[in-house]
Image (cartoon, rainbow, N blue to C red; front, side):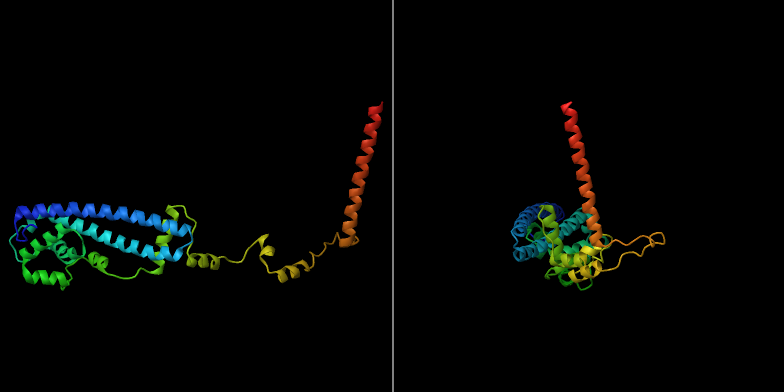
Length: 260
């Protein structure tokens, strides 16, 4: 393990190593998350929603941890870009790098990157015990708010879990919908319109609607005799018989022509 005392050349090298290791750690976590998402999709396909919900909570926490690594990588790159400010012989860091130094000192122990922990020790030695204690406790709020949010340990909300499951199911072409989304879809449907109205009514409502009177006749139709439902059916049968007789006549005429 390199010494934690401040040395300009070693500090710059250690900062660069921290960036590289953070990137490698991110790639490893992304590969693991991809495998976990595939397993969750299989669980959803098999109908094991509860198991998938438990597993997706771990994926959410890993995503939050991955974002923490990305932020720390950015702060390390910031220190490299502004290394001239970091190398100044001052008791407190310059305002241009203060947030980055405080964030690394505060959040590095929550990572598994040894190189970043060494860089943290070097920064703490450079700026002293009082500054280091203040940064670890975030007394003056010098640590980035985004870093602080990523360090909060809490159970993911039900909405976030459903959102993750929905995206995973969509990505792997699995038919799945959360109970809340199904209920919301059912509740958002208003009354049907057009020809679907009668089909959507309850059975007793359909019976009532069938018994409703027809449209009143116009003035031209008042003088015409009314035809009952039975009469209509009789007329239809009669018209069918006439059509059949016409076909029979045509058939006989065709036979006679063939004989000639």
